[in-house]
Amino acid sequence: MNNFRVDFGNYVDFCFKTFGDRVKHWLTLNEPLSYSMNGYNGGTFAPGRCSNYVGNCTSGNSAIEPYIVAHHLILSHAKAVSLYKTRYQML
Image (cartoon, rainbow, N blue to C red):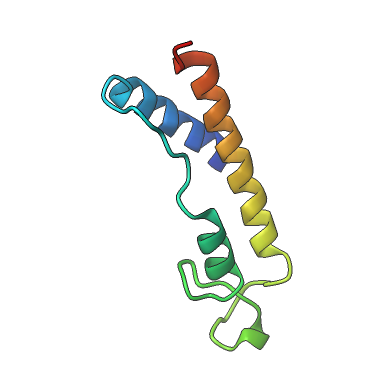
């Protein structure tokens, strides 16, 4: 998952460079709670992972995966904010 943070950092850097002159307000991640809980706890969003007791998933662990995903989403958000503040924010 650490590669996700690096890849996301590269992606937001590209977006800041390419669209920064036209975008006034930036948003890093849209509804991270929804896709961490629904994708890894309830299995109703992609990738559809959850524990067997939920009943609709064949693989996953609802006790730990949502927290791991949320952790890495927070790290990715922090990377994007840090990149913006150090390279692109006009003071």
